[in-house]
Image 1: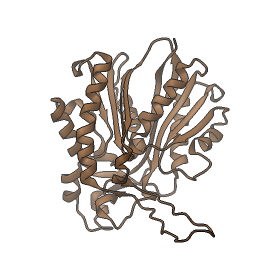
Image 2: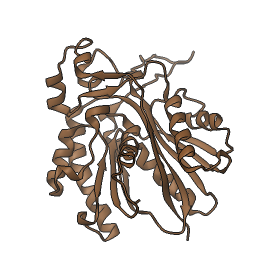
Image 3: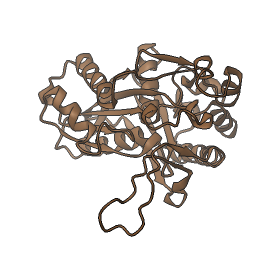
Length: 322
């Protein structure tokens, strides 16, 4: 039976750094107010690059690292809620830039998107019909943020990260726990497009900006993530002592602190970088993974857990052997 292994990690973020102090010039807030509630100090905000630009840089970096020819890339999946267009997919734009013949498509699972996309790519490779896949999480959330709403605009940033996954004889994705609860879909929503045509009886106004019930999301994440990680470990017949790092979605430090407490783990076991990037949605986990790899924190044979949660409501955890 075929399996898959991650061969390379890459990330790319815009050069423009927006500090909490800079945000206080735009909206009624302060560095102390933001940091004490979120753990975020800075975020990257694009000045001219769209989602596909960030994703293309990640894809090119992955190919350069591995030396795998573009023609040998079979699959490109981009997880994003902020595509350049409703159609074509961002993945097709990436594929065109790489000049490959890979099948390409996007998935929309918000902050859980990278975990979902990695799971999908893994299944393609395990079928034996494909050899190499590029999986990218990329979002330019600054496009859908209301910059007059201090409850949301302080939280998010722009960025992308990804991995190159290859067919392998040894299993490196050891277990997964991926679910959704659509009954709570209204907790996070954005980009609403109302029906507009000559036959509409009552035209409803578009509500494009991201809206979020922060308290509901906090309660959802702190309840769901620990249970998801425990379910993952039970499937793999392992304990947290066997895991080197937990890499959570970088949404809010307070959420991670509660999760760590519920799992009875030191905060140091969780890799955190939201202080530098904010919440980059689907880009969050792969940006962190690439950063860890570049810092030499990941070694062959290490077991790590990635766990995401977000709009849908959706969540997903995965146990990976490097």
